[in-house]
Image (cartoon, rainbow, N blue to C red):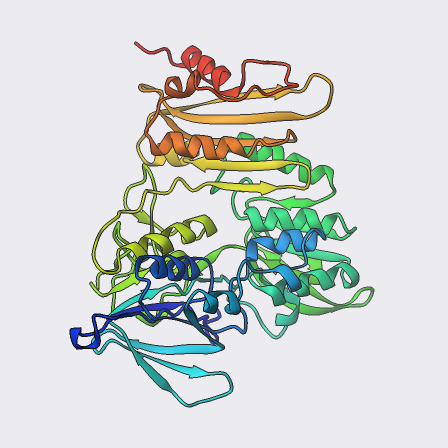
Length: 476
């Protein structure tokens, strides 16, 4: 795979500058960013340093676009053109945070503590200085090496323009190929199929959602999608995409696979993951997993005056050796706040992430946190996994849950939940907290949780899972 880097998103940087004593001990900060991590950091920095001058440099015209709202927009539940963000430039400026939109940071010199940027439609390079810098440049979607002269029909999923292009396909496309079987690929495949579009989903792994789920949970999702008419091609790699003439269908995109198969489509959606926008500091600070900027527990890089947060930085993941690249909205917000607290010196370490995710499949919820069994074994745990399904008495609602645990201690390592019952995503938050506190299943077995009405088994999922674990691996 290769990446399109001609228009890198160089938008989210932050500075903290302390003025000399002769200027009345006034703290002055310049921040350059525009999304989850950056805004979270700017707001918390204003709380920590109310006299600081904070400036946000944003490449786009607007800020705080929530890319996670794209599926809701495509399902007709949210108009991201009007309500796509959670704050505005006007609101931030009212809080005392200066915003310079449509500004592109071209270069950073950490030796002289300068940044170099241009304004929209101008080649005039301007400079600014800082004492402390926070990079929050986010990530960019991976693109194939073989993307040719058909970019209007090869779509990634990242911003408002991408969302509008996908929605346009509702009216113009009959066949779409989705490459990538992660959360984005699964969500988009189901949404597009619901509009009568023939969908082929290409997944390199032997089952869907392999980064988050073990095979049993993934097979449930695959069965659901296949029942909706989605063609799922597993263990399949795209090797070429060509725009070719078809006598019956006209000009089509043909995707060729490593199995010498050809799939024809009107458009291809590429959703195989993201990589960090770390290029601005690539030769000045240490890089880690996937090229993300390596940070410590205080979000500080290998340069003492430079911090990094969000999708451009590494994350500390609970019970995982080393720091990992974990592009994730809630992680970005956590990191932004922690970096702000530590700008003037180390005060608070970040709590390791469990990697908590939830996805609503339009009437069906899928959520996960912690390690799946495959990843737990890769980290050296001797672990087991128990499964339980609880159905409702008077409806077809149900909850499926798979709990991963350490065999000897019964410590909780992770959970995967899937079902149609209301409110089941709370299990991901509950288990995330249990993992954070290093708890065994017995530590939460008799916790005071509210009574879940309507289930055939009234004991509750946690008590039932504890019983299953003891049956599988009795404590000595």
